[in-house]
Amino acid sequence: MRKILALLTLTSFLTVGCATTQSSQQTGETKVNKTAAGATIGAVVGGVLGAVTGPKHGNKGKRILAGAAAGAVIGGAIGYILDQQAQALGKDLGVQPVDNTNPEVKPTQPPITENKPVAVVKEPEKVKVILKDTVLFDVNSYKLKPQAKEMLRKVAKTLNQNPDTVILVAGYTDSTGSFDYNVKLSEKRAEAVKNELVLNGVDPARILTFGCGPKHPIAPNNTPEGRSLNRRVEILVYPKGQTIPNPCD
Image 1 (cartoon, rainbow, N blue to C red):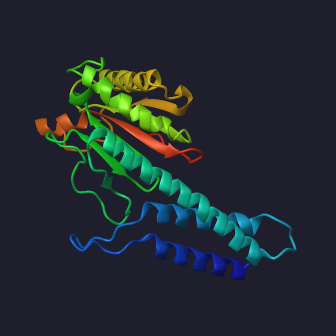
Image 2 (tube, helix red, strand yellow; image 1 turned 60 degrees about the horizontal axis):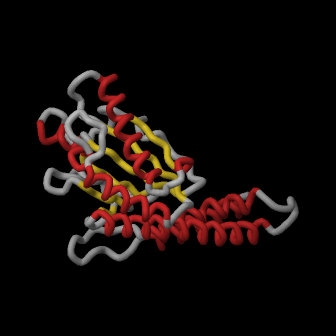
């Protein structure tokens, strides 16, 4: 058992070491390669599965290495898919994806602004599309604007090219007004986005919708500018088979 733990520790150390890229010469920040990070997770998980499965008297060391190798391949493939998805969605929406794949670097600014109301964010386990409400709807409305439908048509085309993902659509509001009203409005807005994606060919079985109301603000609610950024819809893209948290929790 000690040998197994030692080998798993070594595997984890090696794969984590491979998951970081060289520091950016311009910013000095160390970034995490999404494909490598996926391989890291897959290798560790695969190694554990290799250790606990198979014949009781077989060579556990070989099973660990085999499981780690298979897990690395799977994890690396997932990371690659998410990275490609982020790049394609960024191209669809005319923005450069924001790289938040390094868990040691915490974002200090909201990903969207008044002048940049659309963002694509790469995270270790998902890709997030953030759309300010004014891009999609009129005030207190859940009817999509014509330009919003065209934007979602492009997003749907990219999502259709990668059917092995699960999509969450979450609506958010600011903190003004009644909580129940805000939750219902955010639910209807999330449903409107989902319906448009479905109209453009995305399988409805892949899409979950949530109305989170004023939960999880990305900016302070004590200023008009902050409240404006909190009114948004997020489209979250996860690899199939991954445990997906409730975005409202």
